[in-house]
Image 1 (cartoon, rainbow, N blue to C red):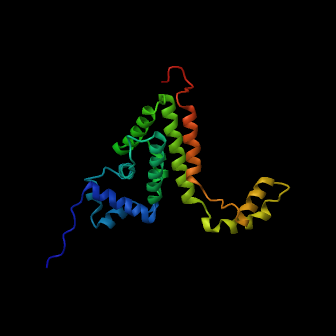
Image 2 (cartoon, rainbow, N blue to C red):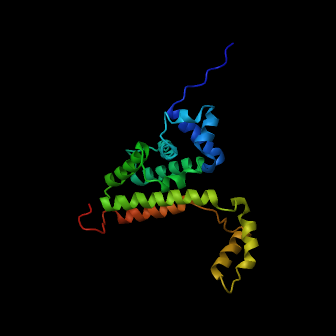
Length: 222
């Protein structure tokens, strides 16, 4: 029996292999050489499909953005944006390297542009001015990507919060830091879990947007 034939090299195959490599080992482990080794091809063969490392990173971002799906149309705008936020955070959690890369690169592929355009459309259709829609989607994305980064890099696991809070108490004397001390006591004793709460912050943004709807700060912004 002849050995199974490997799928031909393609841009899609290269990008998915690069994403898999970054997911497993981080972006620092990704190079054209390590990618070629993972694909079992020569390095130069990659350049028939990807111009260079920068182009590879931009294309990886766009593939990941294309994995973000959420229902649109026929729903309350807040429900639609809440679903968008949850879907985005799920993809950012699955690809821990993505949030920093997305927020640090200016080139936008079709999937990222569609992500932004659909969000703007949701806000505009809900009655927000252009000014409010622009500020609104930026506020949401700043929160989503920032939350993903903090979640991924926070040095203490949620099940260790109580012990960590108890350990920090001697460094937070009540006479110097009364509120930090009191909050840490609550976490140490278990009356407050102290964990990050994505929904809480998201609701603050959406409720704030709802109050601002139609009230523009700039003349003629609608």
